[in-house]
Amino acid sequence: MSLRTLFIAVFVAFAAVASAGGGYLAWREASQAVEEELDRRATWIAGAAAETGLQASLLVGLEPGFEDEMAWTLTRNRLLRLRRYVPEAYIVREDNSSLVSTHPADSVPIGTPLRFLDAFRAELDTARAVGNATTPAFEGTDGQLYKWGFAQLEQSDLTLAVLMPADYLAPLASLRRNLFLGSALAAVLAALLGAVLASLVVEPLERLSRVALRIQRGKMEQPVAEEVGTELGRLSRAMERMRKGILERDEQLRLMLAQVAHEIRNPLGGVELFASAASDTEEATERRRLLDRVRAEVRALNAIIDDFLTFARPTSPSDSCEDLRLPLEAAAELVRAELEERNGRLEAVLPEVALPAPIGAGQVKRITLNLLRNAAQVSDVVRLSARTENGEVMVSVADEGPGVSPELRKRIFDPFVSDKEQGAGLGLAIVRKVSEAHGGRVELVDSRGEDDPGSGGRGAEFRLYFPSLADSGTDHG
Image (cartoon, rainbow, N blue to C red; front, side, top):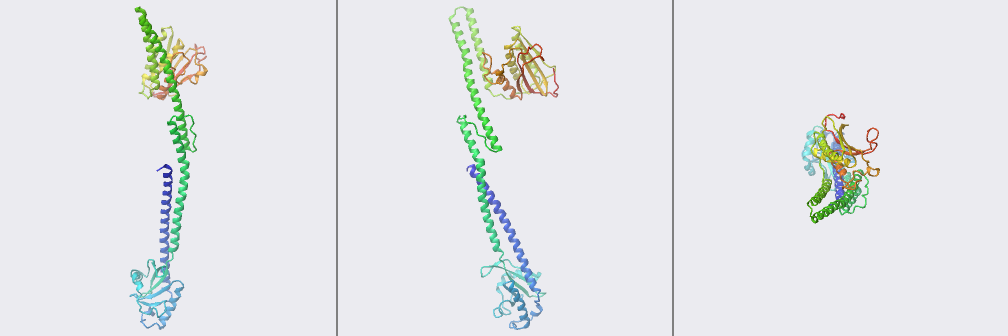
């Protein structure tokens, strides 16, 4: 079943069940209320008639053939007045025989058994016991519904029986019919409403589904149109970001493959050249020198491959480091030795207190080493410092080199972006990737000026920030 069909079916089922159930309850309550009201009216009529001059003491001695007696005639005339309100009325004895009726005298003489009342003996007994009673509705010979109302005459065995039309079922049947039609109309309206809402919900989902299939097939040039609505709009915007992200990743992959081919071709060319020269020379010293060059090219090739693998490999958060000063000092020692070989220097200013942060020592050493070596390639003076400020551990690497050109500042952390002739341009991209994976960030701050004596307004400064795990956020110098 499609989502559109399911949507409509649920709406129709809910509307039908709610309206039909509510209608049935309303009809049942109305039917019960009307029937109770009719019972009261039947009891009132029978009781009122019993209290309007019908004297049981005048009728007790009447026997068959006494229809001409004054008491019988007087009682019958009073009973005939009820025909304005009810179709039939009888005064019956305990054996359900007629004493007086509204029928002509020759049709129902005194003592005539009223067999039709035998079906209501229970109600008659109730009336004789408590004073009045009514029967359930029943269908007469004319096909109409009626009820009998019974009332005891004084303290005697005589009972007044009046027949009342129970025509309340006709409006109830009309009510039931109207309720049924209302339920059907509610189902139709629910179907229309469901169709409209399904169009508003399902059609955008179908469009987004087609967009997802288009992206899955690699056709990503067309942007994802933003849908109307909060949730669908958010989903369409997320799919558009996904499309752009895939395009960016594909572009990075294309650049990385091209860069891999370019970066590996140069060392391989050198390896082939030096290996060929080494095989042609007979001099041991020259051969050793050439083989050393081959090994150097192989190491450079391994370094390039390591950079590509590090950038391509997913980075997951590592264990926390209890003190960042240890990996920072280790990275500084390696670069210090490289600088001192060319009479440069590395100045490290680290606090006396520990710098705990949620990043592993190995990761800190790696990305700090990248920043330090980048600085050492353009400057003979490199400065490393660290401190805690505003609840974060800040690591700074600064140099006195030419700085970063304005056109590169916005793209300096993108992969394969570099102002150096050698290298794949992945060092700073790796630094950003690793730091962000551990809840940190890296920034290139403005070039230093008068506030930093000795810089001459030149150089670059990169800062790493990580959440501090220390109890206090007090600054340390």
